[in-house]
Image (cartoon, rainbow, N blue to C red; front, top):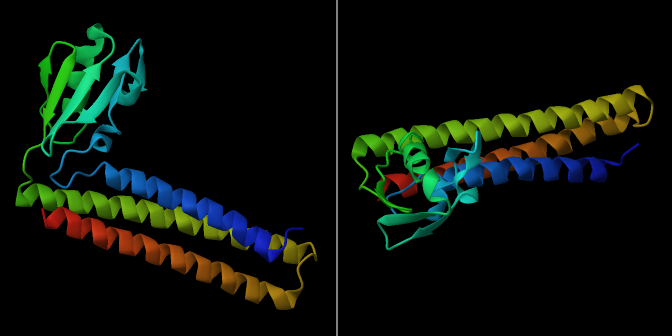
Length: 187
């Protein structure tokens, strides 16, 4: 049987995974500045399958308002252009042979509000993920109690420790969302 520290370490690792996913998703939400990570969610139809953009091109920034995409295989340039347009990022790339220039437009008030809603959706998905991890931890404790590996007296304490850990991670997500909303609305 695992000790409470082993259970909590496992839960922390899983919860940190949910935070890492949220960080990645938030990095894809632009706040008016050009960042190569903005194109991370873009998948290109290449060689008969969906492929992440970074696997078919070099992505870099050129100043605060432009992302440059240098496609390695010239025949994929039209596919990359189409994938960027259809990614739902509100971007209109300009193809120049093997190179694709992606100007970053200023955000309208309406688009900022849309982005804050998307950020809230990402945060809620992360909260759900954290709660699922908590449920797993509680199940481990209940199974330990049922199998007589965890004394009844310790079950309530373990459950409280798991809930405290969960609350800490949920609070971290809320803080991240608040910061991202401020970043989006202040540009």
